[in-house]
Length: 115
Length: 114
Image (cartoon, rainbow over all chains, first blue to last red):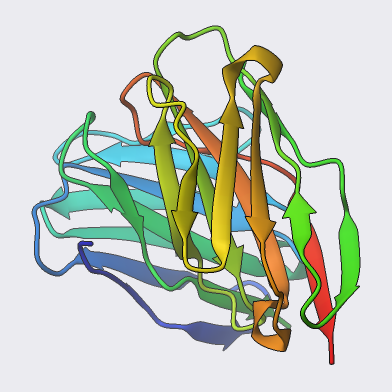
């Protein structure tokens, strides 16, 4: 399968600061990327869908002003958690696909801890 | 709306036992994909299988096998002769159409004891 790289693998930040997570497709062009969130001992929930060059589509209940998604190139999407708080501590994982009809591949995930 | 139900929250078995993880799904689409992923303690999602709605053939891959039954909307996963390394959380997921946006089940924690 295709390779999707997510960085960083883990990050600890202070409450009130912003954190940026990167999701890169290494060997294919990802026109569509997805961001999921997994709280401890819970399932994965889709946060948003991003298409290269356009605004992200957020799922109900996800604050778009808090979770900024940028998909400026065909190989990179970023998720910025702005003014992070302890309740944002979670596992964030992205997936990338070559198109709407193509299979999506997951990154390794990023464990965010806000202290 | 799509929904994936994994009724078993946690299963404990002794090594070498066979174990089946259940997955029941709901969708209005006639075209969809079903997935199983393994999530070890390190957190990454390990892809196990992707099956489309038109292919009801059961699949076997080593110690793993999958039973897809559209009549009962189930896609169960069996591990034969379980090993300690199989201990993980297993997720069943569904995507509608040919899409790649997944809806996950709650997950089943599998503990294999030696």
